[in-house]
Each structure stands twice: as structure tokens, then as C-alpha cells.
Image (cartoon, rainbow over all chains, first blue to last red; front, side, top):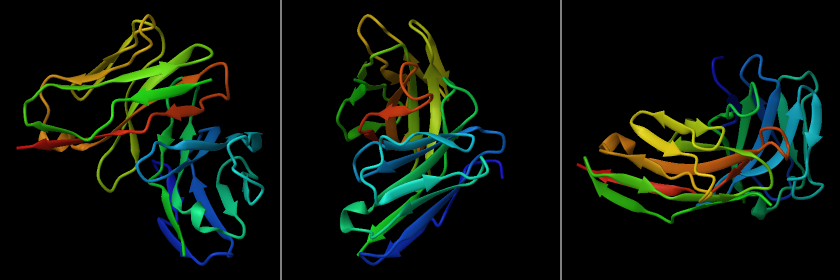
Length: 113
Length: 114
């Protein structure tokens, strides 16, 4: 597609379940980012991929969070043993070149009940 | 470290009023600066950017000038429209940190009344 695509758009899960969030970046964009946005806040960085290499995961809050991008295109953010505090909007972005800004998907709204 | 501070909202204006949303930043390196906009029900969209001091970014009637001396990147529009109602985020990316990683402000909600 022409833009960054994220799925699902909405996810409601029970506490303790694992969830997988998918991001399909703009074709040709080598940089891919995951952000988390709490209500009333700006997005906060989680992790960064350059092609298939995860080059920065300093924003992942704990080891329940992981991400992969095995073929340098689609990425999956996985949250294990979800907790209510994980409820947020999860945003994926891709970029062609540094300094040009990132293009964002519409996000996945995760609610943990 | 890197951070962005935006004026708190919400901001409520009448149509055709002048808009300013203040944004200041701190950065460890040489940042590029951005404004993103989020319309209701939609994702974040890049509105404008500036990559070096004294650059002016502009788009859709919005402007912002990269002021290194005051570490600011204030967003302005001379005459707002109802369709400009959205949340506006100031952001920076710092060449000294992870390539292209964005640091965002908290966002400013703008509502424009007819």
C-alpha cells in the first residue's frame, strides 16, 4: 500500500494474554520505529530497526516487550503476559532518510482488561 | 538529553483568528525539528519540518522557524479554519542519537469554532 499499515486497529485482551501487533511500512523504507502513546501524551519511542537489524531497543519498558523485523519489511511487536498498564496506542512509523521525518500508521489501540 | 516542551492546551479560537503554538526544545546534538498533526480518528501526519537553524518550514498555511538562539520552533497560522481542529505535536530528531528517532512534546489540542 501507499502508507504505513498497522493491524489490528483495535485489540482488547485479557490480562496475562500475549498480543502481537503488526506493522507493514512504506515500501522501500529501511527505517522502522515503534512508539507508544498514552492518552494525553506524545508518542514515546520503543524500538528502531534498520532493515532487519534491531539497532535500538532502549525504549522497551521491560522484557515482556519484544519486536522483530525478520525480512526487513513487516515488523511485529509482541507483548507477553499483558498487564493493564500496557493499555495504550501503539504506533509504527517508517522513514526513507534521516531528517526527512517519519510516516506513521493509524496505530493499534490496545486495551488490557 | 533531548526533550520538547509545548504550550499546554486546549486552545480554542474563532475561525480566521491568528494561531501560535509555542514549542521549545533541548537537544544534545544538532536536531531537525518537526510539527505533526493528528486529525480526529486519524494517524499522525507530518505537517512541516526544518533541518537547520533559521530554516522555515511551511505547509497548508502553517509556518515555523527554527530558532537556535531561543531553542524554539513555534507554529503559526495567520487565519485558522474549522478544518484545522486537531492535536498538534512538536518533535525533534537528533543526529547524535538513534537515526531518525523522534522526541515528541505532549501535544496541543486546537479547536476552531465557526
